[in-house]
Image (cartoon, rainbow over all chains, first blue to last red; front, side, top):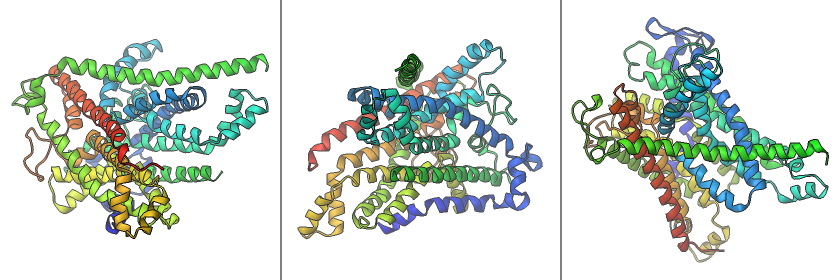
Amino acid sequence: MIISLLLVAFLPFLLFIGLYLKSVLLLHDYSLGDLIFSKVWRPSSGKFGFAPFIIGSIWVTVVSMLITAPICLLTAIYVTQYTKKYFLRIMHPAIDILAGIPSVVYGLWGILVIVPFISRYLGPWLGIQTMGYSILAASFVLSIMIIPFVLNILIEIFRAIPTELKEAALSLGATQWQTIKHVLLRKALPGIIAAFGFGLARAFGETMAVLMVVGNVVRLPKSVFDPGYTLPALIANNYGEMLSIPKYDSALMFAALLLLAVSLFFNLVMHFFIVRYNKY
Amino acid sequence: MTRSQKIEEKFFKLLMIVATYFILIILAIIIYSIFEKGLKSISWEMLTQVPQGGYYYGKGGGILNAILGSLALAFGATLLAFVIGMPVALYLNVFLIRHKRVISIIRFLLDLVWGIPSIVYGAFGFSLMIFFGLQTSLLAGILTVTLFILPIMIRSMDEILCTVPIGLQEAAYSLGSNKSEIAFKIFTRQSFSGIITAVLLSFGRGIGDAAAVLFTAGYTDHVPNGLLEPVATLPLSIFFQLSSPVAEVQNRAYASALVLTLIILIVSLFSRGLGKRYHKTKINF
């Protein structure tokens, strides 16, 4: 029991050390700032600039959170405050199914539905030439993928708010919406931020679905209709040839290390929000 | 209440309803498009044969290799994660029950590990493989997926085990049982349905994940005979078939996606059904 426990407890450190040892070769030759801010990605001539991938990842993540956040917040308030109990019983299996669908299937759905929709309807309607494989397509698919995750946390948070608080506000003559706006949302704020943070971390590391619809072009994207490239997609796409070019494997491991660091950082910060929330 | 307040109230309620039905409609569209595309191209041949020569140019064969490979990989990883994870979850809730601080640190670490993207596990597994001089194989795939689903397994078991009332434990102590007996005989029985749910949840995660096995499990057209051979998996087979320019091969990707979605739906239905059934063995307070 103790051995298993220790194994599990040290897993994050193990991951970090393992990946660091692999990428130390690259860090030895280039400075950290160069790697992160340089825009030139030409592994065959020894130029490793991660900026296009990092910025691509940030674009995709932020846009998808902009889609997910309001939808999840509104839905969570609606199902916990306005509807009867049975509605939640319908919602729960729906959320479970959404959460269970594998990312490859989401990617496939993105190619089948979202990409044609953007290239045929949305793009021409806005007067923009686009292939459909774009930051927007990836963000949309990604936002659907993290909805069940964020929504589950939000529903838990809204249900944990004591009823007395609501009753007090209502008894003072506030309407239901006023109660929600001034009491519930304020009380739940740290929890809401934490839920979005967890969602953000999840979105940042998502690989397959994004890889399939984002277009995979190494370039700084200028608008959401441009194709892009993300860090996880970089790792997944190049694992085949990474042993043929010197330092390439080290560069990919560095990308993995970056992902790990970002994910750990977000989860750490959000964890403290949750802890603060529980204290109230 | 002023007029503008009334409008605000109505407006936000409408927005909420729109958001809720948006989610349900998107789910319906996803299920519909997967089934509609998949049912057109699925056939008995696809489910029972391995790829023949020229399969990836549209010739005959099926995805039996990927179906069996995925099942073997997910079974292996779930079993291994269960063997490691179950004692951890029990240890937390029986042996460490008095050390709240230690428990909360371990839960925090597990939550951190849960949040790590699967591609990082894939990369880590790959660097381990190179370190030990292993080839891409079923074994390497199983090990990577085990690491990936371990926190999911432990945390979901833990959620169930920590609902076991302390009175039950005290009653068992007063009858003279020791800690291991309490852990393996009482806690496991009391939360059997929850443990099954945790196992099936991890299984579903393991079978659907592509990024972790991309580096480690390899890909092959044969059904693997041993742990040290490379193995095909359904998510990867969908991915590869979809990137083919041949229309027939792409159709097969849709069919494979249908198979994968069905497996996951069946597993999640199972976990709901089993959860209800084994509620009977539970002592209610």
